[in-house]
Length: 219
Image (cartoon, rainbow, N blue to C red; front, side, top):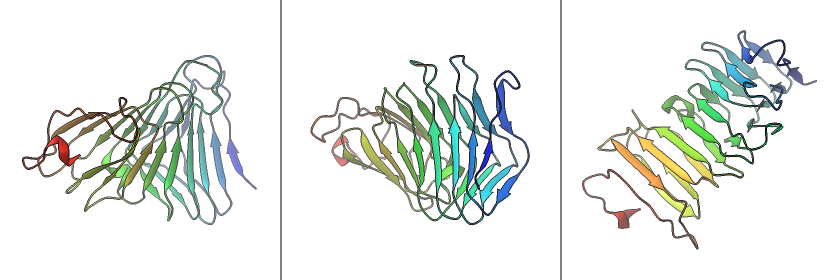
């Protein structure tokens, strides 16, 4: 039995989870996607969504907001689908991940066909690895590395890379065209990266700040 929560737009402009959701079976939470904007999905601060023996899937019609203090926990897997039905073709979404995840495998986040933005706070990858696939369009990834110790960015192939560190779990990105990084220690104050011009796995990188001992060749 899947727990499925659907709120029609005429009933609520913004879908929000304001009470804890917990069960042993798989949990599936949906927001309906219509041609109008505002089919957003929010997990409120302090709320836990969990499957104690199965998976959790979040299907966001438009913007997704996991507020600070929210928790998504699963025994097997966590999957997040952005712009899930793509009823408003040509309109991308923004996913703001400021809550926490707990799962033994990577949290899989998949964008839609439009231009999406995914914004990640340090709490979102403190416990679980993130695997983010832009999956179409011209997508932007933003991450705050404040409090993240010794972050290292590794370019993997065209529009794909990984961030690792001594203090947090890794973030892997696929099909992401623009990346902005801020925060971090030591001396990782601001790092804006554009990998849209990469070819044959050799990414074109622009940056505003590197650690004192690094050059562009170190990327």
